[in-house]
Image 1 (cartoon, rainbow, N blue to C red):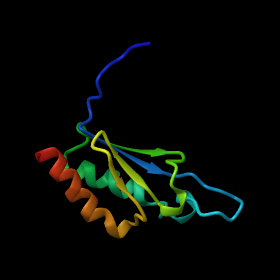
Image 2: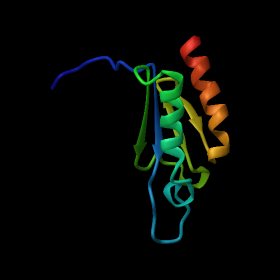
Image 3: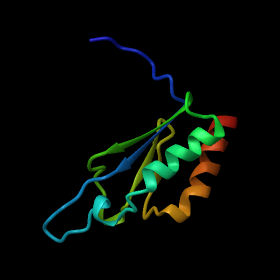
Image 4: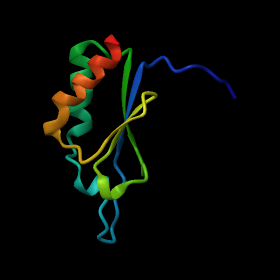
Length: 98
């Protein structure tokens, strides 16, 4: 095992967990374009070396989803939609400039 410190100042984990049994899940309610919209915004800002956008499986609070966790800042975003992208980008800007 190699152990290193992450090179990213912020890492967004976007839950994409889906369920087939009718219970709410992030993946069943999230806009499928959310990840690509966020990745494009990070690229446009020139933050790609500092910010990573990834999909994750279950983050554990499906009823509040779709969810995004920003790590290591411990920022939890719930009920996220593409309409929230400007505020998410503002949050990242504060992280990077703070």
